[in-house]
Image 1 (cartoon, helix red, strand yellow):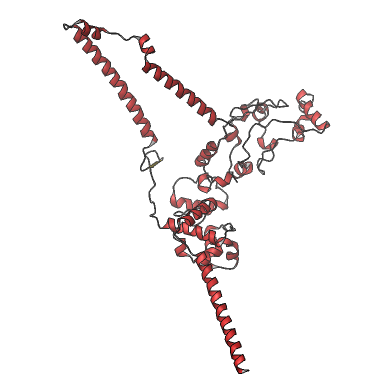
Image 2 (cartoon, one colour):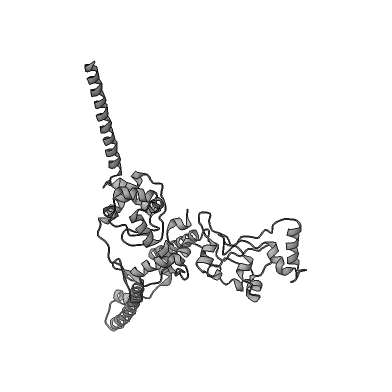
Length: 412
């Protein structure tokens, strides 16, 4: 009996020790799974995740909407980073001092990302790898007119001056060569020359022979081919661009008359422009607010009556078309950004028939985001952003400084 109890005790002890080792093994395995690595494949995965999800708010070496992430793996515990990235709001609500300090400083709660521990570890591995690289303190130097110029490049203005100078030098060389030929020809004519030498001196340019020469024909063929290719490439780059498009509408509505002569505000008819993604086409009742009394017997107004009586929509032809892969919000630009309608739609008050004024290409939008100052006045949301921006630049804050060049802002 005593022996049986001893065996039972030993058996339970062995199982308990095995259980402890299992826990330690699992814990070690989890810890290793969450450890950072220098594996190039993992770092590449982290770079892809970082650039696809984090660059709207974070940079490695500079503050953006959030803090600079350089050496964040040295400044924060790995477990804290894992928990915070998964659910920052929960960390703030729990009273975590670091999370609350970040919120007090930036006044923004980071988006919660449904990343796995391995994905977060790959992002942090990428950040650590980038932090190990030397910080670039001067990427560009300002030119005399205030434009940034890459240190290793040549300013565009200098390149134009160089090209003009080279062309001028070539022209001078041609003139000098022509003068030398004339002087030599006159000098040689005064000498006693044999027939062959005199024939060379007295020879004249034969245009017919030049045109028929292989060199001229080759040059002409090259020039013609270059023009054809240039025209073809220009045509390819204009596919889908409808600048100047002005279709005939089912009702002859004149923007020149309404917006120009009578100065009717665009927002009166396009009611959604300040509160919606779309500017919307005016409904017939908006037209009839005026035309019940103004020109009610006009043939064009009769078309509106017919649409109402027959309960059929007026089939307006859309003028400004963006591809389905692009997102554009009117209220964000007009109400928040304070952009005037004419900025994109051109001199509407002068258009009898509305047409597409701008080319509405991606490059056109990006250039606008690079050049347009961010409208931050009277909006407390931007106070901290403006303060952070003023620390690194004396220039006004542009749309691009607020993530205006991030792909996911327009393509999602």
